[in-house]
Amino acid sequence: MANYGYQGAYSTTTYGNQNAAAEGGGFMNGSQSGSQDSPGGTKTYGKDTLRPVTIKQLIEAQITFVGQINSISSQATNTTYKLDDGTGLIEVKQWIDADAISDPTKQLPKEGEYLRVWGRIKAFNNKRHIAVHVLRPITNFNEISCHLLEATAVHLYFTRGLPTGEVKAEGGGDGGMFVDSNGGAAGGGSNASKVTMMSPMARKVYELLRSSAQNNEGLHVNVIAQELHVPANDVYKAGDELLGDGVIFTTVDDETWAVLEF
Image 1 (tube, rainbow, N blue to C red):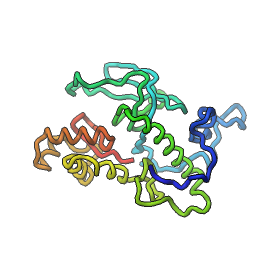
Image 2 (cartoon, one colour):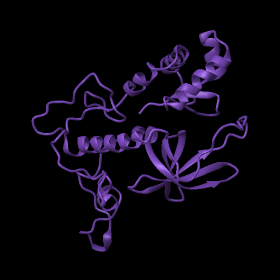
Image 3 (cartoon, rainbow, N blue to C red):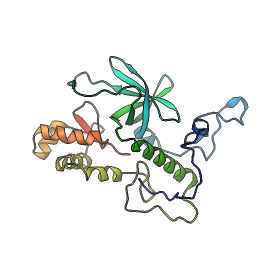
Image 4 (cartoon, rainbow, N blue to C red):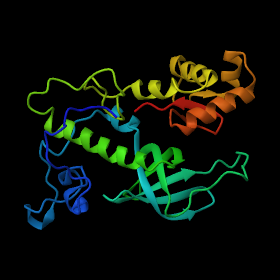
């Protein structure tokens, strides 16, 4: 995990205590809830509660988080998971590809299990939910603690800045999920560190997806196979590696992929 320079600089964080829901669980209450100081509980916004963004950033923003499955609702077109991370609940929708070949050996998520989600924030009927790009079960529970600590570090970085006396975070390490080791917005650094540990074919597929001029739909498996002059089965195996680690995501169908940048 990236070092944001907060060792010992702050004695407490909002994660890990009993008031996580009341105190925002590492995120500022003012950006989501009404102010207790304003008449009728109407929302008030201050400079310390909002992060300025562009419309392009809003449209293309991609997020990742972990949570425990509270409930599962299956419909003809999608499966909705309600996830809880101790700071709140949110619905996560995974749309079903009717043309995809089902795998009877694949284990489906169950209530009580933990998932890592990659996706985008959407809204329907004035209710926010997450449209899933990648959904992966968590098997190592250290990942949950790591995620909460990193989310807290990122929050402190943007709301308080670097601790007094610290010039910058240490370089050369993992860039983290949202902020790189040089203090900027994350690009491909985190993905690159994951890909280096994968098979040679997975690295080739990733580099092709990353370097190819593509629209939001990405590249189809057959196109990748033609470009790399390899069998499609090899591309599928490489894709499973990349999808499993959240490096790429499916777009128009399960056989069209794009690089997941966050």
